Amino acid sequence: MSVIIAIDGYAGTGKSTLARDLANALGYTYLDTGAMYRAVTLYLLRNDISWLDAEKLGRALQNIRIEFRISPDNGKRHTYLNGEDVEADIRSMAVSGVVSEVAAVSAVRRFLVEQQRQIGMEQDCVLDGRDIGTVVFPNARFKFFITAPMEVRIARRLGELFRAGADIDADAVQANLEKRDREETQREDSPLRPAPDAVHLDTGGLDREQQLAAALKHIEAQ
Ligand code: DC
Image (cartoon, rainbow, N blue to C red; front, side, top):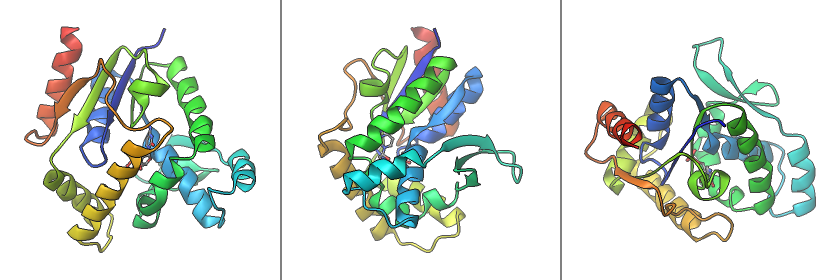
């Protein structure tokens, strides 16, 4: 049986950095499930398909192939949509603005959760998302629920967007984070909430090494 480490929490709390660092430290595969919801969203936006039109959405999903591959440009793991490297495009504000609406649609969730379970069954994995410890792998060996104060989350997202060359202000980032928090915790299908057996970790006062050390300490103690 493969070992699963589930990392759930709000956007911009440092989940994916922690998940990637843990996967590197332990030699596990890292699976960014948010990137999968983003890739579906990008496909729908590009092809002008409404996620509320069940029939068109169903057909669109059959044409979507998501993979994670090492980019020949920088040696990092990138998200590929139907063979195209979309790592930068899926992080754009256009995608961030509506991805939580797409992620609320059950057909999209079923489509992606099945793939996530398949990948997790084949290898030891660290997965980060919103429903990993509650829905995708309720029997995960280790579960973390990550939080951070709003100011810290805004600063992190601004940094990411700035490095990606986007021109965006703090108010817009805050509005987007608040919208997504609302939509992700209030949706009917797989709302964001901590699994009862998750370890809570507030990354607000921690730097990257400290948050990795805190998570590893819990893993080694179990
Ligand atoms: O982690 P992220 O910001 O890249 O996630 C993008 C969106 O996908 C986010 O609005 C919530 C959704 N998501 C989800 O509903 N379930 C997951 N397991 C991962 C992400």
